[in-house]
Each structure stands twice: as structure tokens, then as C-alpha cells.
Amino acid sequence: MVVPVYNGGGGHRSSSTAGCGAVLDGLAADSEVVYVNDGSRDGTMALLRHVHAGDARVVVIDLSRNFGRKWR
Image (cartoon, rainbow, N blue to C red; front, top):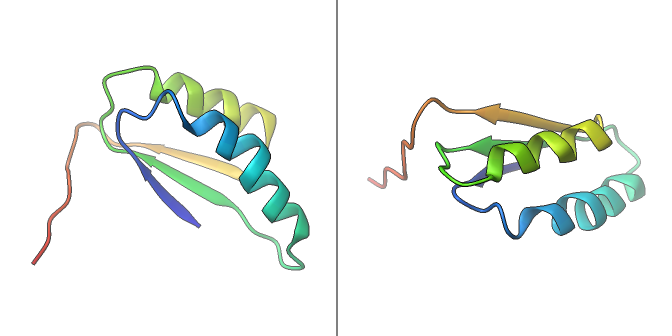
């Protein structure tokens, strides 16, 4: 599962550690959650690093700046 994140430092910890972890525990296949930090300017990256440290199935990608959404 891939989860884009932008300035979401307040709400991702509970969903990452409890919600996603519980779902991954229930899957028969090996799975992971990939968070893509889209240039957040709040405490999002520190929070994602904390979540990753607690669960190896959480992968964090930190983009160099905010690329936003490109709809075509």
C-alpha cells in the first residue's frame, strides 16, 4: 500500500501503528506500507521515522520538495 503524505504530522501515527499494523498482521502475504512524504514542512517526517523504527514493514520515502498532484 502506498500512502501519500503532506503536512500530516498530526494524524498519521495512530493509523500507522494501530490500524495499518493490525491489517498487515492479518494478511497471509508479506506486505508493507510505503509512505511518500511530499515535501511536508511540519513534523511529518520525524513522525514517519518514528513509525518506521517501530515496524520494519513501514517504508518511508522523503521527496525533496512538494510536487503536489498532477491531474490530466
